[in-house]
Image 1 (spheres, rainbow, N blue to C red):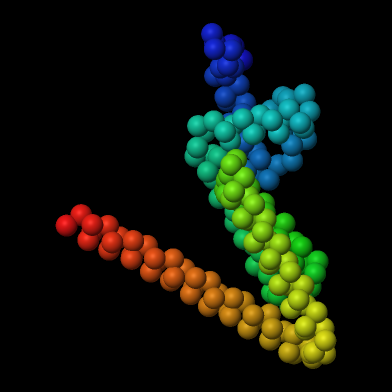
Image 2 (image 1 turned 135 degrees about the vertical axis):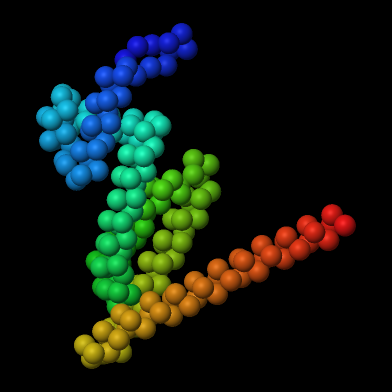
Length: 186
């Protein structure tokens, strides 16, 4: 890479092509070690840095595809662990929270100003507390296996209903705000 007068690195066409190949390999699920070997990087850490640079740069189609693939993988993990977490499985609850944090990171939902990050962390902590309480309640109820299985279906349905109510409330506020803007313009 060359330096411009502002002391910023300008990647060469060869560098951009290597990073594009590395990103494509990563998208295919190839490990950093294998990427380093195939593309010609010194080691796995150099390959990871190259992929990180490629993601930051305007190699958008490949980067967006990788983000979408990773998002799909995280969704599958959530689908697998969510019912268990709601059923009181503390390991599954931990996996759910960590997967949610990874999703936030992947899609840039943790802003540098720290406010969104703190809100997300608080929501995750509250979710962990609720899951802990639910798990202890379910344990004390001495539920049968059939009843526990039913919880894995009923609890997510009820949580989805609450989320829908919250989404409707947000929409109502937005519609109200738009109506007030129209009245103020008259």
